Image (cartoon, rainbow, N blue to C red; front, side, top):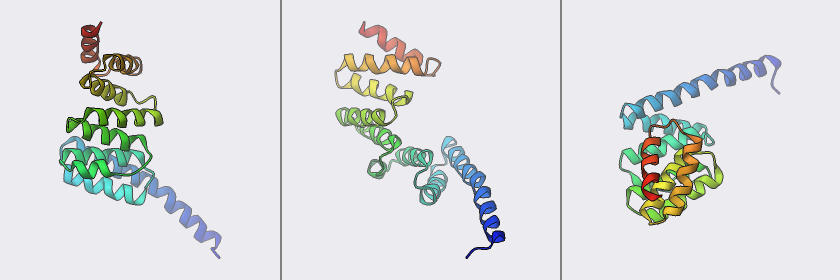
Length: 163
């Protein structure tokens, strides 16, 4: 039986862990953005082990594995999170397997339809599969969701060539 003092101590420990986990995610993101991928991988693996449901950690771990050119490992990450399908789509697109990439981006969008970056990459993959109709559809959604994205001018330019 836990005493009330023990329960309060456990509660304060749990509350204190939240900022530490957030700091660890931010540390990993900082490593990723500065191309220190081995350190980023360590941070994200620690988070995915201690917080299996942390979608951000899974996403960045997958992206880090792609940057480390460990594409099979990135593609094999198993989860029903949109980030995993998104990462696998990136891996498959990098391998020039655009039909498979389209499937992964579509699955990611089925789970998270408001993910502008998935619409962007789905549009790019559809462009490479010779499906301008689907490319236009995804690019239009992308532009509605992220009109100020750095990729928006490129998307607008591609759309002008199709019309």
